[in-house]
Structures are given as C-alpha cells and as structure tokens.
Amino acid sequence: INKKDSKLALTNIIVAYIAFLIGTFCGLLQVFIRNKALELPSWLDYYQVLTAHGVLLALVFTTYFIFGFLITGMSKTLGEFGPKVRLFSWIGFIVMTVGTLLAVVMILSGEASVLYTFYAPLQASGWFYVALALFVVGTWINGFSLIGHYIVWKKKHKGSLSPLFAFMTIATIVLWVIASLGVAVTVLFQFIPWAFGLVDTINVELSRSLFWYFGHPLVYFWLLPAYMAWYVIVPKIIGGKVFSDSLARLSFILFLLFSIPVGFHHQLQEPGISSFWKFLQTVLTFMVIIPSLMTAFSMFATFETTGRKKGGTGLFGWFFKLPWKDVRFTSIFIAMFFFIPGGAGGIINASFSLNEIIHNTLWVVGHFHITVGTPVAMTFFGLTFWLIPYLTERKLTKVVQKLAFIQIITWSIGMLLMSTAMHILGLLGAPRRTAYTDYANHPATLEWFNGILSNHVTVAIGGSILFLSAMLLIIIVLQSLFTSPKAVTKEDFVEFPIAESDVENTPKILENWWLWIGIALVLIVIAYSIPLGNMLQHHHHTPTGSEGFKTW
Ligand code: HAS
Image (cartoon, rainbow, N blue to C red; front, side, top):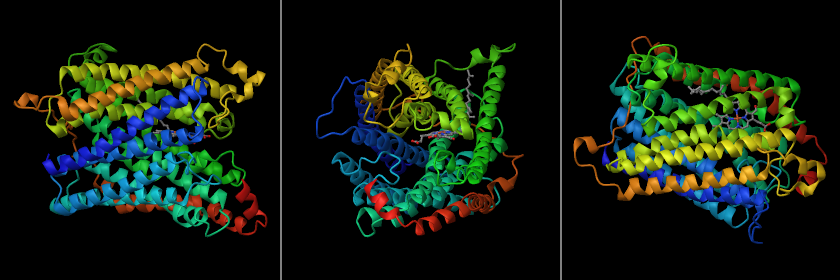
C-alpha cells in the first residue's frame, strides 16, 4: 500500500503494543497480588493496577490495533487514501492519543481507580472523564474518515457491492458509533458535571444503563475485526475462498441489529430495572448469538471444502490438509477454538436466572479472558506476525515464525490454566474485583483453593506464562519493526492475504445502510426508551438520592 497510509497504520499499531506492554505487566502484578506473593508499595493500590490493566488492554490495545488493521485493509482493498481522509485519520489519532495519555496520567496518579467499566457510584477525577470523551471523539474522527474513504469509492463504483473487507469495516464502524453515543452521553452530561462538582448527585442506575448500552456492543467492536480476519483472511491463507459472501455480510448486519439493545444482560442483578425489560433484552441477546453460530458454521465449511479440494478424503481427512505449519493460520485456528467455550460461557451468563450464580464472581473474569483475551487477542497476534512486516516491507523471517509458534502456544497454555481456575473459583463463589484477595481467610473461602485447578497457584502460574508470552510478542514486534532484513526479491515481500469472495448471488439490499441503521434504531428504542424513561423519572422523585449516593 501507499507509504503514507502504511505510516498511519504502523503508528496506530505501535501505540497498541506500548499499551500491551504496560497492560500485561499490570496483569502479572495482578496475579501475584491475588496469590499474596506480592505486596504493593504504599503509593500503588490494587484497584489502580486493575484499572490500568483493564483500560490499557481492553480499551487501548484493542482500539489502536483495530484502527491499524482497518486502515491497512481499507487502503489495500479500496485504494490509497485521499489527502483529506489521511489528514482526518491523523487528527483522529492525535485526539485519541491525547485522551489516552491524559487517562493514563490520571490512573497512574491514583485519581481514577474506577476500573475499566468506570460507572457510578465510583468517582474519578473529572479529567479522567474528559480523557474518555477525547478518546471517543478521536475514534469518531478516525471512523468517519474511513467512512469518507468508502463513500469516495462508492461514488466511483455506482451500483456495485463494495469488497467484503470494506463492507465489514463500515459495519464495524457504524456499530461503534451508535454504541459509543451511550458512553458519550453519560460522560458529558452525568460524569463531567458530577466529578467537577457542578452538581451534587448522579443518577446511578441511568449511568450504569448508558454504560452497558455501550459496554456490550463494545465487545463486538473487538470481535468483528477478528471475524473479518476469519472470514476474509484465513480462507486465503489456507488456499480457499470465502464460503459464502452473502452469509458473511448477513452475519455482520445481524451484529449491527442485535448487538446494542442487549446491555441489560450485564445488569440482571440490579433492582432498578423491571424483569420484563431484562427478559426482553435477554431474548435479544439470544438473537445476537446467531451470527456467531453462522460464523462457526462458515468456518467449518471453509476448512472442509478447502481440505477436500486439497485431496483430504473420508470424514476427517480434510482436517490434516490444513496448513498447520503456517503460524498465520495456526494462531487464528487456536483463537477460534477458544471461542467455543468462550461463547458457551457467554450463553450461560445470558441465561437470565443462571446469571445469578456467576455474576460478580471470578467466572466472569475467566469468561472475558477466553473471549477478548484469546479469540480476539490471539487473532490480532496472528495478524501482527505478517501485518507489521507487510507495512515495514521487511521479511517474515524463520526466527520470527518460530518465536511466533512459541508465543501462541505459551499464550494458550497460560490462558487455559488461568481461565479454567477462574471459572471454577467463580462457581465456588469467589468474588471478582476485590482487594481482599484472601477473602479474610474465612474457613469457607479457604476451601475454594484446595482444588488442583482451582487454586491461586494455578492462576499465578498461568499469569506468569502469559506474561512471558507477552514479552515474546514484544520481541517479535520489535524485530518486525526494526531488525528483520528488508525485503528485496519478490518472494521476500509479505502479502496481505485477501480471499476471493463471489458477489454474484449477494443481494444488494445487504448494503443498504440506511435500512439497517433504521431497524437497529427501532430495536434500540423498543428495548431502551421506557426503562430509561423510568430511571429518569424515579431519580427525580427520590428524596434521599443525593446524599446517599455521595457517601457511597
Ligand atoms: Fe460476554 C460479560 C454474555 C461474547 C466479553 N463479556 C462479559 C465481560 C466481557 C465480555 C469483557 O449475558 C465482562 C464485563 C464486565 O467487566 O463486567 N458474551 C455473552 C454472550 C456472548 C458473549 C451471550 N463476551 C463475548 C465476547 C466478548 C465478551 C465475544 C469479547 C470479545 N458476557 C455475557 C454476559 C455477561 C458477559 C451475560 C455479564 C456477566 C455478568 O453477570 O457480569 C455471545 O456473543 C457468544 C456467542 C458465541 C458463540 C461461539 C461461536 C463459536 C465460534 C468458533 C468456531 C470455532 C471453529 C474452530 C470454527 C456461540 C464462532 C473449530 C475447531 C475445532 C477443532 C472444533
């Protein structure tokens, strides 16, 4: 791609990996604190480290990496950026980065130990919320510049469907913009006035609801770029084609429709929302599972058809024809594999009354380490291995490939140990998010840790292996950025793999954005308007609300 575009993409990816380095280090501290093997110095607090870990990995690493990947793919599939698009992407990057730096300063100075979910009644310095607002506005500028690039392409190619990669990028950005309106509203109208002392009270239930209106689709903002790699890049690496262009597009449209009106499934234990609305959103949550099941089906179909084409016979012969020695494939395959228990866990969480057993326990922490922490993160690793050499025009050396194998295997083992322990401890009742990591040594809690898999040692061993794996990844990133030899011959150049996708039978209606955005908004209004209206009203009539919440 154009050099100027690759510089833009690389800068985003570099920030992602700086966040990854600090974030994973905080993760290491985390497991040792839980194990009581480490006492933090007095100027550091448990919740501060936990906040840094969550914000840097779940929010900063993911978002920057996603933009790096989308920018590269959009420049590759739709052609190089025009000067305006490029300028806006840089402005977006700068606004995001000012926000990120301010947020990191606030967290490190102990002024924002409110965890990555930051909802009320926890309160941070007002500047932390200003930082969040800047970050979100930066993503919008970045997102709209990608939409602008797409519109320019569409105008030049009237009547034709856009390439699958571009279509999926737009769906992801639209999802993000609609979702982040919720967090923007709560930050601007609730948190900033409250944290700067302009008002005395905050409507806690409303803030949590607006947060989760955003917080759930946020997880699909992480997942969809990973799915883009699964749908568009993996088939090319294994020598096949996209299984079905319409299926792929339809699944992204279903995410757009059903990702947002489901936030209450994070609030099933909160008393301020009536069961009817919780149940409605539970049903919609089950709708958003469908596009993931479609994706699983599509992946199996791609693997089987490609494997058979390569001569695999019998029931499972095709399986052995897949390119297992190619780390670009194996990494993402393992990522997919982790999503089977990850997704099943999600279905358990969403199952209304079952949620009572797992809510606020370590199970949830286990769940998100095998959703965002492996399927998504390891897909991003799998992309990193070739994406950075592609952008720096360096070789993907044998050494890097070997290191990459060790990296993904250690990550898998670490995650398996750590998340299994977390799931079991959670079922036994161990709470998440508490600095009382020994649970005051209560006899009932001590028993939790007697199991072979369910003890803090397993978590600590898992966490340490993960940290080593993270450092390996940093070495791979540094080598691909600076020390791998420059590509000279044609074979040296690393390709950006994009699979062929037949659009002949794809209905044009799938690219009718206004239609889908319209339906998405209707669903949001149905799921949210009455319960949010109730929250606004009830707060108004709560006489003791103000002082009560202030002292929480
Ligand atoms: Fe979740 C909590 C429900 C998916 C992330 N989730 C969280 C939190 C995070 C998170 C970060 O209903 C914690 C938030 C906090 O801090 O409080 N989640 C779901 C459901 C899904 C789901 C129904 N979650 C995700 C994804 C995430 C993510 C994706 C990140 C990227 N989650 C919940 C609920 C809670 C929750 C409740 C609140 C819990 C509480 O009470 O606090 C679904 O989207 C899952 C659908 C997925 C599938 C899997 C399909 C499988 C595929 C792989 C195919 C494999 C292949 C390889 C082809 C149905 C696509 C095959 C190879 C072989 C060899 C077999």
